[in-house]
Amino acid sequence: MSINTKEFFNLQVPFFYPLWRRIAVVAVALAWALFEFASGAPFWGFVFAAMGVFAAWELLLSGWPDNAQKE
Image (cartoon, rainbow, N blue to C red; front, side, top):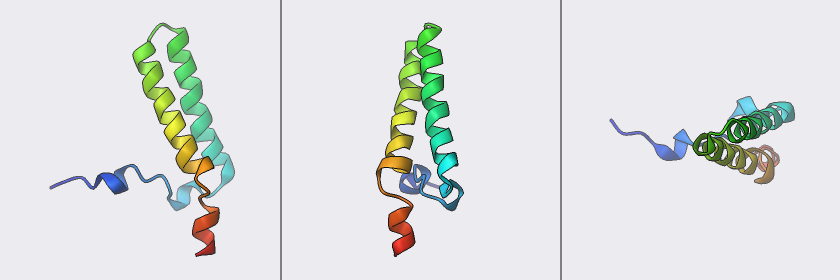
């Protein structure tokens, strides 16, 4: 049994069609990163910052879901 990593990291699913959900996921991840940095845990701060940046790219900056709805 193997994990399909292409599908594992795919955030472009119908759950994220509403803009408020996409913004909330990015905001929570980045806010948690700030909390981790402020509490003296830089490793976890970088982990959550990377998650927030990845989510922002996939959900807000890549042009999805506008491109998917045109097809």
